Length: 332
Ligand SMILES: NC(=O)c1ccc[n+]([C@@H]2O[C@H](COP(=O)([O-])OP(=O)(O)OC[C@H]3O[C@@H](n4cnc5c(N)ncnc54)[C@H](O)[C@@H]3O)[C@@H](O)[C@H]2O)c1
Image 1 (cartoon, rainbow, N blue to C red):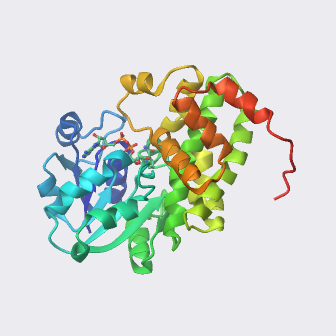
Image 2 (tube, rainbow, N blue to C red; image 1 turned 180 degrees about the vertical axis):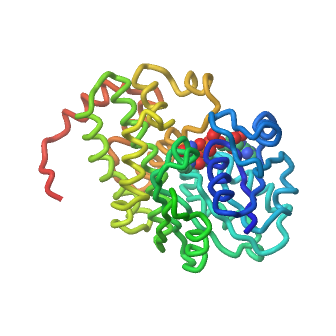
């Protein structure tokens, strides 16, 4: 099959290589000319050390990528997804399938990526949507290390199609799920919890604090999944707790790293001044704080993380505040 990949950063390029390994054809759309040149001329990506498959090519011409196939894999930061879809819609003129691998919720609308696709793509050209998500560091998948993901869709046939396209018998196993909402939401919320986990490390705390953040964090993931219409059990699978573990316990995670710098006393602005790479967790914290205010539901760690990002609370003060909360039972 032919796949148009929208976004040639760490994850888009890694999945391009997986698709090539599985004998599919790919063309990457990327706005960073340096990435395009390195992929086309030297078969490398500046983010990674290893050589890429020489058949992987990239372009900064959106129309060419749209005309290349009718399967579009979205791998851009969620903050640009709506604008990118608006641009794509101008060139799409036949039934198309969208596979999203980006993880986030739009702060002002509280919409998931599948809902943004419905907003922006002409309905006559929209065949269906699949979210491919789960515990995955690009740095490991690019080295073909064993990884398990979930292909989630309300359309079973499409979930199966994506499962078969991405799975192989050497390093990638894919499960299907019909809980699109739960899968999309779990993948987004875990980034917010990973920022908090990183912040405790940045403050100098150890693994006890990290385990506490991850465990109490999954309760906030469950709350949001249920609030947004997903199934509770989904939060306890690969797309919820699985992705939370890999992101919130690893120095490889950009969200963990971003949180760590916050814990060390840096601001968001200072962090972005040093790196252009996507830290979805910051934006997701704003989205979830808006959600919690809209529904008048407490998300204790996420609400405090929002105050920290706004400069209204330090990480140390937030932890002291959590410790002073009324004592209660853990019985669920
Ligand atoms: N890196 C991972 O391990 C990983 C794993 C799973 C999911 N994800 C998700 O995938 C998404 C992308 O993450 P990433 O790690 O690849 O980020 P990245 O920053 O490495 O790559 C994003 C790419 O999008 C490009 N881009 C930005 N604006 C664009 C625009 N308007 N049009 C076209 N391209 C544009 C950037 O130039 C960049 O190359 C995020 O939502 C992230 O949460 C990442």
